[in-house]
Length: 298
Image (cartoon, rainbow, N blue to C red; front, side, top):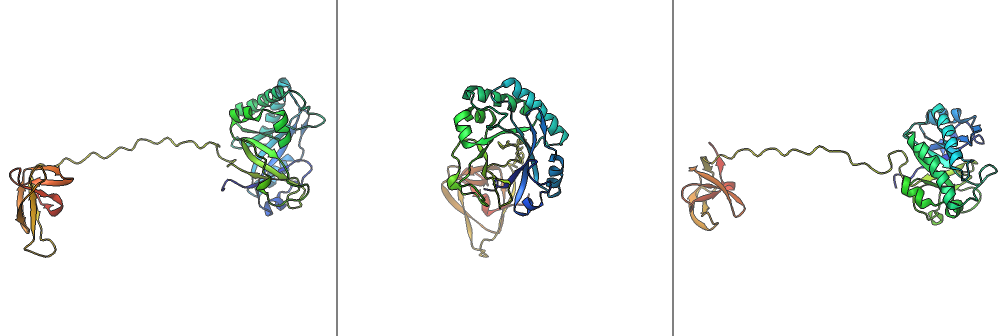
C-alpha cells in the first residue's frame, strides 16, 4: 500500500537529531509534547527542527494523566493545545492521545467512563482544528476502552502497540498484526533497527484528510449541437477509384431502392436518420442517400 510508511515516536529519551532514523527509512515523527498538566518535553523543539531539516512529517502526542475524568481530560487538552501552538504543530497533522497505564494514569475505571474521558480530550483537540487519534497497547484498548465509539466518532484513528517479540525488529510481520477495527498506525517494536526507538508503520495516509473528499466539479456543459441545414448541395465522390461505382438509395422506411452514380452533385431537401445512418433527401421519400458516401459542398 502506498500509504504505508515508517514513523518513529520520540520523547526526551531520544536524541535531538533525527539523522539516523531518517537514514533507516523513517519519513515522519510523532513527538511527545506534553504529559498531564505538568510536563512539556524540553527536547521537542530541537527534535522537530531536526525532523524538518530531513523533510520528515511531524505529528505530536500527549501522555494522558486524566484516567476516567472528563473534567481533567478537558484541562489536559488545553495544556496540550497550548504546547502544540508553541511548537507550531501544523493543523494538517495528528495530535494523538497516549492513554496507557502509568503512575499518573489510572485505567481501571469502567470502559464507559474511560471512553467518555478519552472522547472529551479528543473533542477538544478536534475542535481546535487538528486531526486526532488515540494510542495505547492492543490489550488496554480491547479491555478498557470502547474503541467502537472512538472509531465511530473519528474514523480510522487508532495507533496500536503490539509486538511479535521483545527486542529488535526492523520490519513488521503482519502475521502478528493486532486485528482491530480502525487501526491507522501500528507500533510493531520498541527497538527499531536497534536504535532504541519505537517503530511504527502507517496503514492509512496520515497526511491527507483521511476520507477522500470528492472534488466539487462544475457540470460540464455539453456543446450545443450545430444547426443542421435542411437544404444544400451534396457531392457523391468516386468510391474505390472506380468511376462506375454506384450508391444505393433508401426510402424513408429504410428499404433500398435505386442507385445514383458517383462523381455527381445533388440538391438535398431534408436530413434524417434512417437505419442508424444520417441521410439526405434528394427528391421524394424514395430517394435518401447515406451521408457517409457524400460530401456537403454548399
